[in-house]
Image (cartoon, rainbow, N blue to C red):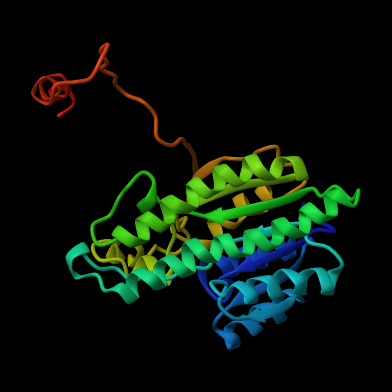
Length: 278
């Protein structure tokens, strides 16, 4: 028996890399999977390999995201898992970034995650109110660029990924009443995106001697997602980094110092007080 027997899952960005690895493992663990991507031919190959269904199109399109969720429900009678993985990279330094680059990154990452979550949430809310309480799971994809390791040239990408982490925490609070857990991962693996990241591509492209563990293999990320997608998983509102065999639990903004007084601050005096943090 597989960990995900009887579960129905959606995986976006599933034609290549991490998303493809997710789809393959979820299917091996018994899930029926609808895979999504904008690249039809490699997506169809993944769908054929897992005996699942393909849905081609951008999840940044509101109606297309709705159609993706509906396809899973129509084809398999239910929806249990959403894995939001789709993403693009348009690296550029702040002063050189064009509006089209900003719009594309925010659309695919932030809006794309939200759109699929929204339509899945609406479905699960209706199921819950009809007396069919879901045991659902959403796994979003953040990044160390938006959490623990900001990277020059990724102002927009980092902001989108940080937004996904924050969105995950809020969605977890909202969806708990409907029986749905929401978590996120910040994966570190060899993908077309990381290979194209300035200053980092060479690290990911380095050859691994035969027989040695490849810490950057995208397949290393999938077991974490499979567990988070399972009915046995208790976690919600968590963000994990995953690289090779290492998994870390992240926490967000926290207070590390405090100054206060009774009444308003004088600007010069405030500067003296805050200088200890400089």
